Length: 194
Image (cartoon, rainbow, N blue to C red):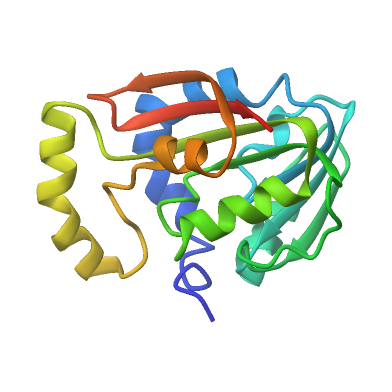
């Protein structure tokens, strides 16, 4: 059982203010152009699923079965297959996907480097990585996320406010093509290629 099992039914409602203020616009910039065989990591309640074009085929992965059930209720233009799996041990062959995507997932991954190595493995050469994440900010944003992180993590036990996700993506062997930031650099849209 994961902490997200108990959050599945109310997660979208709790995220509504953040979605309206920041994330919805960033999602619309991130996911509509992603096609082919797509692996979405930590699909959660499936908020990205309606954004993919009909030409995509989505394999939606989450560690939480209740989150996957919520995701499958969401309307989508592309076919979606749900797989319950741990991001550290993806049950797919090498080079199986044209693109790997995720949003707000690497803050809660136990070992980001190990998970990104798995992502690198299942992505075909030249494949795209598209992530929408909250990370350690820049300037005042870095100061805020660093100060708030101990309290935040003590409260929820899984989400890291100050992860250096862009650095981890680069260290995992991806070439970063695009990095857009919002709100003091805390929210980032990262696009890389294998």
